[in-house]
Amino acid sequence: MQPSDTPPKMQKYYDELWQKLSFEERFLKGLQWIQFNREFLVAGIRARFPNFTETEMRRELKRELYGD
Image (cartoon, rainbow, N blue to C red; front, side, top):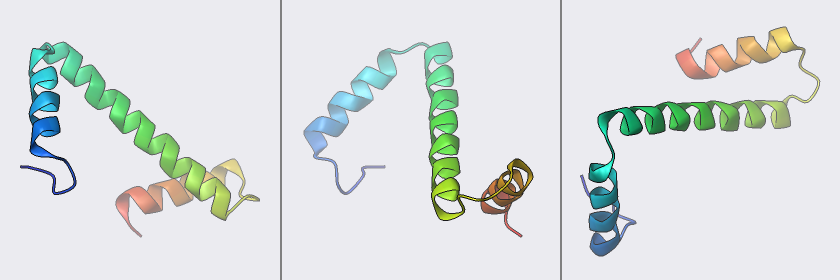
């Protein structure tokens, strides 16, 4: 699927780079992306609720990831 904000030439370049990676490299990149997104989500929660305890933080993270 072509992202609407990415020029076709750049998308082709990205796709070619991605295809050059081994399965293991793509898998590890996926795990890194998941970790990055989790850290980004945690930072947003901490910004909104700076006084949350670790328990409250984990509860809010779970709620945002999986719903109420």
